[in-house]
Length: 154
Image 1 (cartoon, rainbow, N blue to C red):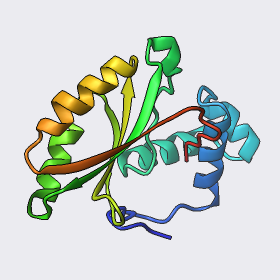
Image 2 (image 1 turned 180 degrees about the vertical axis):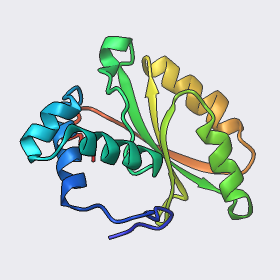
Image 3 (image 1 turned 30 degrees about the vertical axis):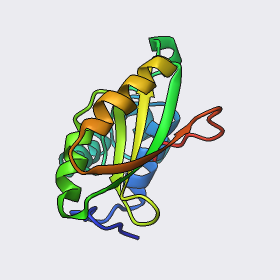
């Protein structure tokens, strides 16, 4: 299944999926270790990995423990905006350093923005001074996270 805006250059096959699954379990696993598990050559694993990275199907990034980095508050903010500037407003909001995820969507809100803040004062400053200053933002609704029950990286 393909989502809007996510067109694949090529289809993943079983070997590609197994490489991805091995890296999901241990992102530091060597190509040789993956190759042994799959019964293929390390060169094949390396070639497939590099091709998936080049095709932007796979991106390897560190996953941090944000609380250890001093961020104690996460929130999702629903934003309703003037429709004629939707994309421009989304791009302007996405540039704020607190924003870690942003989608244009349908439903009650036009944009959903996930933010990472040091504390409630930081969130208040972001909402009151930065987000609300964006021309075309009509209303916001903020949902602060109490506990993350499931977090999945596909």
